[in-house]
Image (cartoon, rainbow, N blue to C red; front, side, top):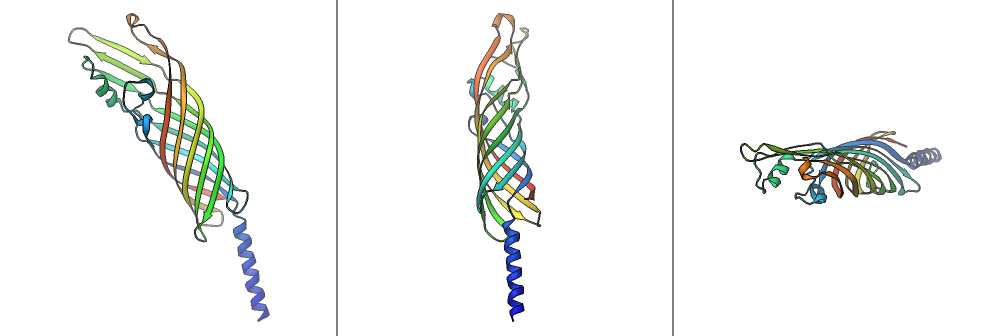
Length: 235
């Protein structure tokens, strides 16, 4: 009987020690990026001219526990959202201009962030993961080329805004699930809100000489809902 209790105690201690070694994870995740708010808005005001569409994101993240449930998190992210050229044409059609066309690149966002991390077990293998993070948001605006087609016989006018880069404060709030499939491997599903506001200074704008031209300075807010799935290495 003593041997049975000793063996059971040894197994229990080994099990507890095994789970106590779960200090967090390093993971790579990817998924869709859904623009919301002004980032997905429409209009002719500088900080609303985004027409961002559904995009994609990928990140590498670290969650490290400092105690049973809480710790620190670090994240490196890249994100790309195309622009909807058709919306440019619809908006500019409110003017007496016909046969307009628009060519536009994508919005590109990057981030290096750090913050707090919480892990709350639901079962032996499943846990709820929460993150609140702040850091550097890097943004690159799209190059926009607009050709205004005038009335028959009057030709066309071309306007071009160059791409520009900016850095600003970014923030992220997220929640997800982590499922431990093996001693060193886990699967993750995350949903987060990612945002920030960047100012683009002295952006080159090229228009016909009689229209002036020069540079433009504007601010742009970014708001996206990101849903991702990934695989991680348990620490």
